[in-house]
Amino acid sequence: MQETELTAVPETALWTLRNRAEEALRSDSVFADAEAVRLYRALSGEDFERFGPPSQVHALRAMVIDEVVADFRAAHPNRPVIALGEGLQTTYWRLGEPAGPWFSLDLPEMVAVQQRLLPASAITRLPCSVLDRSWLDQVPAGPAVITAEGLFMYLPPAEIDRLITDLAVHFPGGTLVYDSIPRLFSAMTMRGKVRLSDSYVAPPMPTSQSPRQARRLAARIPGVVAAQDLIPPRGRGRWASPLLRWAADTPIGHALRPSLTLLRFAD
Ligand SMILES: C[S@@+](CC[C@H](N)C(=O)[O-])C[C@H]1O[C@@H](n2cnc3c(N)ncnc32)[C@H](O)[C@@H]1O
Image 1 (cartoon, helix red, strand yellow):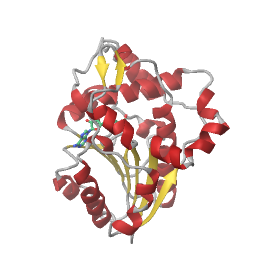
Image 2 (cartoon, protein in one colour):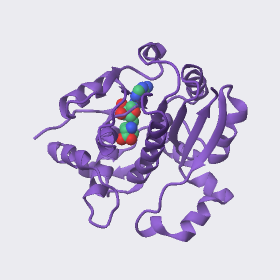
Image 3 (cartoon, helix red, strand yellow):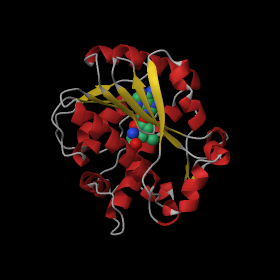
Image 4 (tube, helix red, strand yellow):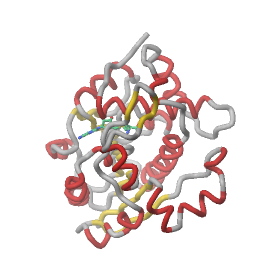
């Protein structure tokens, strides 16, 4: 019976793992993730019920990011994948243990859990805050695909532009994919109002970004040449609704929905 004793922001990696594993376990889902299911089952000492009813959002997010990584690797098979705030993601196994360098960065307490619970792999683990740029010295410069899945919302707002600028400088010709939450949701977390169950309140998420703000990044941040709003695949139930997809692209939808952004860096 294993557990993690993770707290605060690192603990949220259990929430997203649980949601991907529960989605992969459904017979009516197209999302497959055998390693997430294995890990979820191995963590039988964790009270996953504290994260409330499962949601498919984190599996849909992962499917978009998988596609970005796979496309980049098809074009640049020897260039690195860099997963920032990777937590208990099992992307590496979902993509078939791809050849080529894979770097995974997370806080030291999370890297200790990854090393204890995830299978041996060719992943280079960087136990470091993304805000401490010494990690860049350990990763080759040049084109790379960088993912930040469920990370930017937890960082201080003032850090985001600086981080993207530094990534564009170190990884010319690279691609960054990340997700963002809307301002209203961020404000609710700051007031402790996102309660997933009687025993769990989501931690503060101080950074929000709308699809419109994301699109402006190409004009605002030197080294960013293109910014694209990525739409997740159709999910199940209400996530398959044509009305929801239509609403996602209205001004109200832009203000209220989470978003996924793809940035391309200048060569
Ligand atoms: C919501 S979890 C997402 C985990 C994983 N990416 C996923 O989608 O399942 C947030 C992750 O960000 C990591 N994190 C938070 N602040 C960080 C920082 N300053 N530097 C690196 N990682 C950080 C946490 O440890 C945790 O793994």
